[in-house]
Length: 282
Length: 270
Image (cartoon, rainbow over all chains, first blue to last red):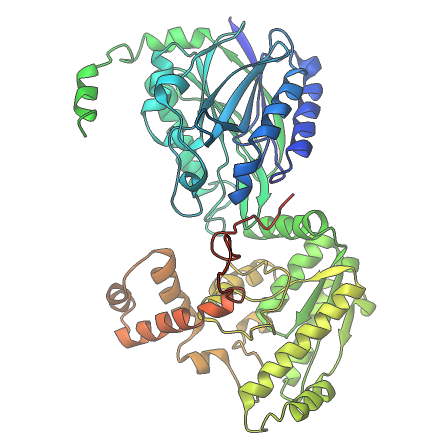
């Protein structure tokens, strides 16, 4: 057994109120302090809220200060994943995720695929992450891990790259709003939930890794984030599933040895780079 | 799932977002206001739900009875259900504005706007919001009075077509006569929405859903529903021509950033 304990903090955020959201993050970290968790994961843009519109341009500095404050609450062997707005070297803002631990900010990455359809208009505000610098596998005392942000999970490459770079688990932090609620029922769930679960399971199975999905809960203007955070095993099993439409704080325990066992029965090792030679031409 | 979801959202909107204490709702005797009243009672409780029936001389007796039955069914305390005739106010405005008695739409708009003013005054007294009762069918084709029944704080069933509202009323076990009768704004005698639209809500909703939710073209819709294409076009044209009713008043840009175009902030803005 090679167990890792992960806290999934499925929380709401108040749009643009970084101070209030920071306090909420600190409260959650204090709440799980006695639980000996290796990771605490918050959703996409958890420090700022998602549907910020023009507020997005003006929160990066405050986010940076808040990350320092939140980091002080993390223990030596613990890692926290926090969604925030980062300013890059060119002065553009990015939809980013920070890794905090041992009382410090340890690093960050940014979202590669910025959705701009339907209600999403991320390319108006954000610059995309650079795969050469933002595809990162972080080391922790518990394991190696990577982070992708929401839409990145709707494409095969980011999670595959992190798995091949050696990540045992990939956090997928999200702000996924609900739709098709009238046609849904509590047993079947939401259409978007079904799609997400299919994607997450596919990533876990194809890459034989653990996938930890942490979605927002609560309202923002017309939208409502449906929650339903989950942990998927390398064999595609749903280990943990959080509440739908509500805040939740779940602790999930995974056994990393499952990765090795699962890899004996998959073709994950047969990575044919020639396929990418074709893709790069497209 | 829809009822629980809307209940949660209404509670959160009134208590947390708006920091208010109650809901003020104008009852019409129809299915939309019945469903919204049910949601408010479920979300906030009977004591924080204030229902007002504001009849005019063109309001039917049936609508009055149905509103009374609804208030009783929901268990709203007597003091929270009030009936206030509006004819005196409407007549004064019609006279002051020189609106001809033959202008039934003009007088109808005065009725709707009188109700709006009264409801907002009551909501202030009740430390609450005016919870609107417009549904997606009406909003999409602009079948409401601008600054009248459209002048509300929140529209909990604004993303449900009339057909879906009726289904929800059935799920809520509201009195059958409320959701079985033909919808009417009651602005003049014998007025029914379906007569004015030239088709029933079931068909209207099918057209709207196909055109705007599924992005089907007009020919495809006419073929699928086996109706003349001019009927589809008429509805689509009505949606386009009433766009101004769904938007705040246009501002002509002069400066660097203008409300409505490039001055974009969320409704909930910390």
